[in-house]
Image: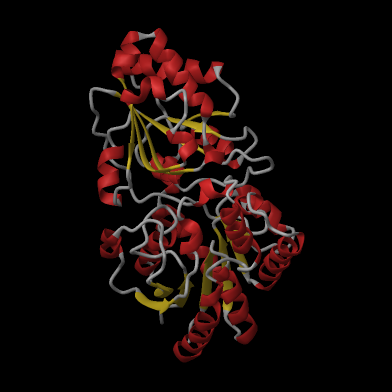
Length: 417
């Protein structure tokens, strides 16, 4: 019996670092073990915000990878881009307007034509059974739409984030015409695709109204990582934290407890690894406890695993915007691999809240709740001092990529057959 052939088009692929690359790198490795013949089309010399060259060693050798050159003006917008959104500088405002209105659907638009052409030829010459496009960037879905219109290939669209309702679009000076154009093309892709995958239940529910073959396949983690504790009451965060994620009350509560409790102050260490907006770096509540808070640069995945294994508590901060409740940060599943209590900041009716409550993996706080947040931190600190482990998460193993790939394998076979 021949192996089914799968073509994946993903902008993010090693040497890209960060959480965006992990999803299809790990799914691809797992699917190969299940007998899939996999080819990946990705970008050559892409302007990735994070590089992790070691990840290239994690690609299964049987996966065929083709890197297609990309003209990418996004470098004009990426440096301190989240700070620039709030900037009053006229040149920054002009750049944001150009970014929002002249590059559709995003600054990788110049990649669409070449990838479409090469993918169509590859599909026809290699008898590919199924195409997967994963976004963002949403240019990949337009590539998939073009391919679908020109071939009889079965097409699965993977939405790691919503498209027309993408939270970053809400922050940009985008015209009504362009916003409607995003919605129009999102609906086109949903209608043309044979199956839809999303990473959150709420988004699946929304897309099911357009395409009934919509399924939730969350992000995941590779394997559980053994803890390597230090003497400190160590609270950690990894990844990007934009101003719209800033948990201001968390910094305030930490400062208050440090002022009230000398033992807590002596034991506390907060390590924040990644990229943080100036608003967070300059927060007034952090200044009195700055000796206990360390902002650190990105680490490659293998080193990050070692450092994160030392944490007693993990921090998750979702997007603090109205009506944004259908995004589950990929780092939540990475956190699951450490089996440590999570303090999460999110809307209380969000997918993040539902998942943390379901797995009993921590507590979720909205961005205004100080009292309960303070009590929970003190409870965790008390357990640390008493060397008690009251943390009893449930069903975390179901979010390993190995287990999630079983579901993906079934979905692929259902789509093809």
